[in-house]
Image (cartoon, rainbow, N blue to C red; front, side):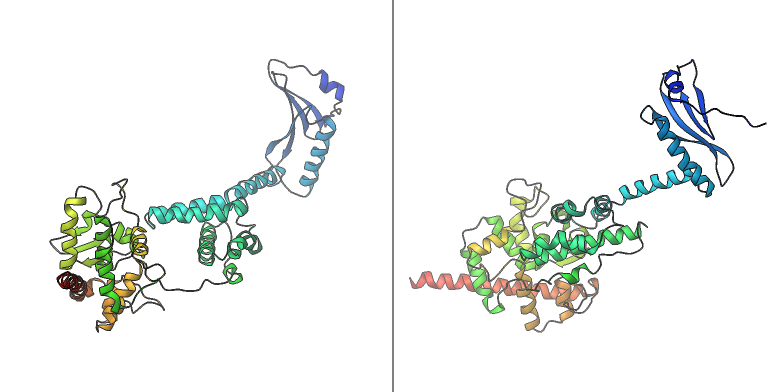
Length: 412
C-alpha cells in the first residue's frame, strides 16, 4: 500500500522546531525540508537517477530564502526533466563544468600559461618583459576577461585600432603575432578546435621594412676618426670598438661576459640563450679584439661583464649607450650601432669573401632576406681568417687616423 504524504503548509514549516538530530518534513514526490539541530532549514529533492536507478538528493536552497511555493516550482522542473530521462544532478554538474571551463579559458589566464613557457629559457628576461608589457598594456584591458572560445576577430581589431591610428605598425605586428601565439597555445590545450584570429593581421597595414641606418665602407676611416676624437668614457669607447670588431648585435655585445671568453682557443662563445635565434654563436677573437680584452681586464675584470653598468656592475651596460654616443658624434639618422653589421657585411662582400662565411659571421639564419644556410662550426676556420682581415682593416684605419693627426701636428 502506497504511503500517502500530506502536502506541507507554511504554518507547519514555520512551527517546525530543531531536535537533537536532523529530521525531515515531506511534501510529496521527493520534495522534503530538512531541519538541522541548529534550526536551519534546507529544501531537498530525492529521486532515482535515470541512468543507474540509484537514489540521490539534490539541494534546492534554504528556507525562508526559498519559500514553499518556490521550492515546489523548482521541484516541478526536476520532475519534468526526469520524465525526459534527464538527470538534474548531471545537468548541474555540466553547468558547473561550463563555469569552470569559462574561467580557465579566459584569455588572460591562457596568456599567463603561454607566457610561462616563453620564460623557460626561450627568451631573455628583457625580451620576456617586453612581450608581457605589450599584452598587458594593449590587449588584456580589452579582451583579458573574455574566454578564448568566445573571442572573435572584430573584438581584437577594435582593441588594436588605436595602435594602428598612431602609426606604430611594427608594434602592432608583434602584438598580433603574440596574441595568435596565445590562441594557438589554447588550441593545443584543447580549449578550442581552431584559432579564429589567425587572419587578423590582414586587416591592418603592414609596416614598411627599413634597414638600420649605416654608412658605406668608404667612410670607415671617418668613423674611426670620430670614435678617437669624441669625448667619451673609456668603457663606452671600448664597447663601440668591440661591437665594430665583432659585428654582433647591440644586446649581444653589451651583455658579453668574461666566462664566455676563451683566450686559449681565441673564441668568444655566446650561449644560445643570449642569441636572437637561440643558437650558440662562436666569434673568433682577432688580435684587435684581444687587445680590447687586455684593456678591459684592469677596468672590469673583477665583474661578470666586460661592459658592466655604471650604476650596478651586476648588470650589463645598456645596449643603447653606443647609439647615444654615435648621435653625439654627429651620426643622427646616418648610423646606429646595429648598422655596424651592414658596414662589415658590405666591406666583406666587396672584398670577395664568400657570402656563406659572411652570413656565419653575422649569425644569420636561412630565409628569403638572408643569405644561404650554413654550418657555423664548418665555417669556423674561414671565419678566423675573415675576422682577422676585418680587425686588420679597422686597425689600419686607426693607424691612418693617427698618422694624419701626427702630420697635422707637425705641419702646425
